[in-house]
Amino acid sequence: MRLPEKRFECDLGGWKFGLTPCPGIWMVGVWWDGNPYSFALSLPLSRLWFEHDGGKYWPWDWTVLRVVVGKQEFRVDLALNNWGLGIALHDTTDWSVHLGPFDIECEYDKFYDDDLYTQPAAHLRLFSKARQPCECELSPANDRTPHE
Image (tube, rainbow, N blue to C red; front, top):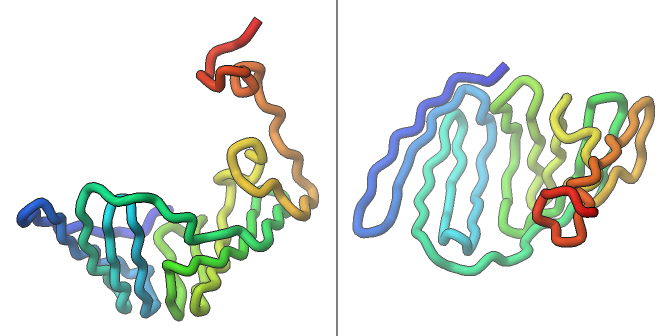
């Protein structure tokens, strides 16, 4: 179940500013990225953010460990652009614990069976099977059309 949240946004000189109050944000943290240029500040019960088009993506984060048990996925990520302390719960099936640059993601029934697009593939899988990709996903042109 998705927790209630409301986004308040305004545009000013090419920048988009926003405030997102959410009862599931119980953390203090900062996050930034380069594509689009963006910065966010998380405070208990809210997130303040701004962004601007442009920039270049930087590979700031890595998955250190991915464990799947049934339909429950646990993932430990190291994100040098996301520093926080606390818990973020936007959905009862998707929540995370933030400890500095480490993020422990807990997701239920989302991408647990998708090793093709979720990198890395699960390091440990119990009582669960990865879904077999259809032929169109393995197309040499990667255009999502079946190959002959």
